[in-house]
Image: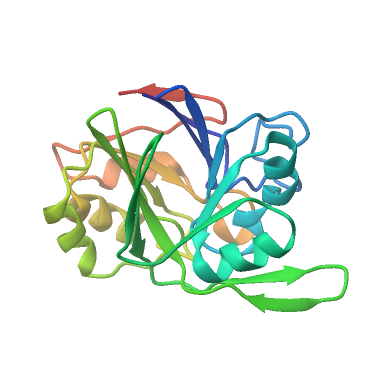
Length: 228
């Protein structure tokens, strides 16, 4: 399984002959190496409905005939845009041909802003994503603050790699993210959701330095990958 980071919260998973893209905020993202008009994928997984996570989902999904997996509220809205969707909800899991997806809770908010008329569309609860394939479990925490049930998630799952937000202001900062890394019990953690906007500027190496002994922290530049 190959996992690559592409700035902000974008992660690409390549497994079982499929490319799975998480939170494809590409247009307007000065941290990414991707081109929304060229990126290829079979599946898009979304953590929540904010514009900096939904991003270019509709364009990419239509061009690639990709399946979009999201909460029922967000999936309904995207379905209205002509996208092929699979709705889920927190606590639910589904075994797809490319791997198993389970949505976890996250403490954040979730809405989509239609820029052309300034309408705000409520898109359900925010989530994290547990993804399992090839005997490995990946946890993308989405946008969240620190909450104690992360311990339970860590106890119930053998997590190989976790993508953890560190930007502060809208999510956990480095200190809380280091605690989250300990609680989820991942063997390796990668910081995400930082430096895209001035209010979330952080030094990812500081986060790595805060990690407890035994947790490997890897700072990935856009386009860099890990193979599990």
